[in-house]
Image (cartoon, rainbow, N blue to C red; front, side):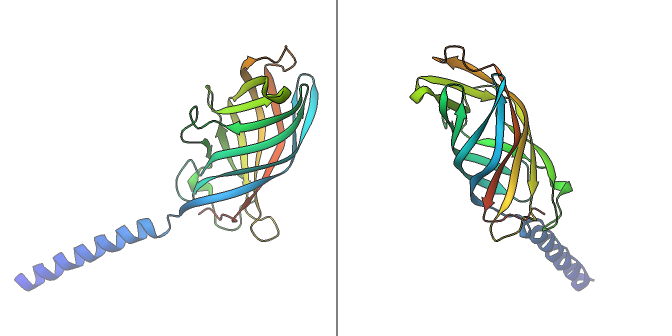
Length: 196
């Protein structure tokens, strides 16, 4: 009887260990880099494009937020000349959170994992124009879509579409409107991430 109880106890411990392993074996976190591919923004009554840019951050293939952008560098045309966009660590310690619901992910085949990108309501994302004299903060929650089936090595895509606002404006002489819309604003991401 004691032997049987011991075996049952050992079996329970082994099972618990396997459950623990299975719960962590699929979890994957790490860093990613990306580059601007295409898209434009509409504000101040006109549509303006971006010519180049890069992003970096961290990913979590199980949890949500799935992506966090910790650095952003963009060069875009605006009513006040070329603008740059950046994430300010002081106003956005965790980076820009991109929520892609875990239960809807299927590794390697998803062409559109729908989610959101939260830019916050404070000083997380900074937009500068006129050589830095004109500044504002991008705010709001924008729709996000992740595509993990893009052809080529290390080239998945994250696309942003939706409307936000340019708040805390300073030195812009009224040339920026209070709202903007991102139109299929797409970044290529490397390494390619297959969310599961």
